[in-house]
Length: 172
Image (tube, rainbow, N blue to C red):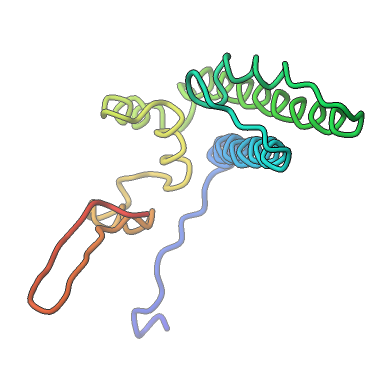
């Protein structure tokens, strides 16, 4: 395989890089868990034909006030609702702790300069920048920006038929 040129370089991250990678992955896992917990609450309420109609969007303070004001006639439903809301609150607190930890720690990461530069781009803040760096490592190892976006799986969408070619936005 070496003679055929079918082997590629594999970069092994340092222990320090792995620590920051674990931190960003932990935050992502909590984000997924929080989404699932919120869906659990929403589906529980849908089964009881309770719908949030505003004002405002879901998971705002007004929505939380509405959720906490819901009273059920039976004890099991009240217990379930209380448990689901505690789970959401707990995950929100855990997410907040991790985000504060990331904000405090990114400056001492191996990618501090790259994170600072990426934060200058519109729509990229510390969490996104550190996540990109933690997963890709040293961005200079990519020969061309197209190989970097291919590494992340970001590709332009295309809807073509016959002679007609229509290119769309990036898709992940």
